[in-house]
Length: 232
Ligand SMILES: Nc1nc2c(c(=O)[nH]1)N[C@H]1C(S)=C(S)[C@@H](COP(=O)(O)O)O[C@H]1N2
Ligand SMILES: [Mo]
Image 1 (cartoon, rainbow, N blue to C red):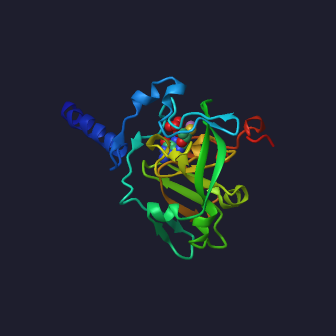
Image 2 (cartoon, rainbow, N blue to C red):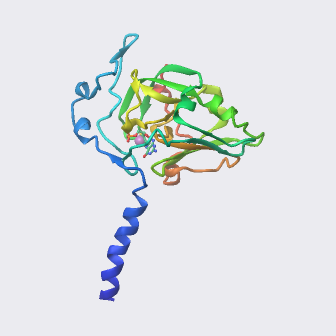
Image 3 (cartoon, rainbow, N blue to C red):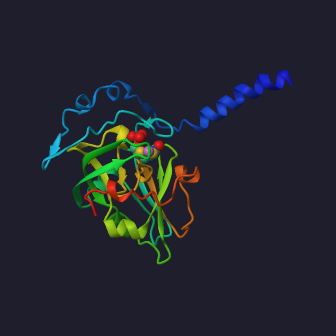
């Protein structure tokens, strides 16, 4: 028994460590995160937009499920798969070639903090339509480089014309916020804002649950009316 434990404990440790550390190298932003809010702005970031005060793109903490991955933009691909006519695989530059929009949106985490950021992104519908979603497709599952998953309904993505952002406060999206891309899941809690997205899977499974949803968080994740911006 003792001998078994001698092997079992280190093996268990290796297994857990392995599952939590995908291939991509990790970034360390602890020095920036520990600064007071006003000092966390990066040089290129704007701090105000049409009278609204913006928050720094790098937040005070990192709650991501396995640290901040560093993504190589030269080899990066955004895949569109699942219930589609033609699968697509876009380079970083090919995604940026889609028409973009600028929007001021606040991200609210269930833990109570928030960040109001001026985002720039391409329209998710344009990307999805380029693959031709099937008639039966109902949801989009976002798969992320750190192993995170979450989903949104196709109907809502279309209705809100949701964006896939590549820029925050006028600067390229920083690594902690999801470089190269974050889903701006307007009016949904932060756990629907997939960061470091690497594939978007069209699916017919309306009961699908992502990483936090599977662990008890509401699949709808709708913000209460008082947190909606602009107010309804
Ligand atoms: N890939 C990935 N995306 C993710 C997460 C994550 O762990 N991995 N966390 C989600 C949560 S809970 C929030 S609130 C926002 C912002 O995460 P942060 O608190 O780590 O800044 O990203 C969301 N997107
Ligand atoms: Mo969160």
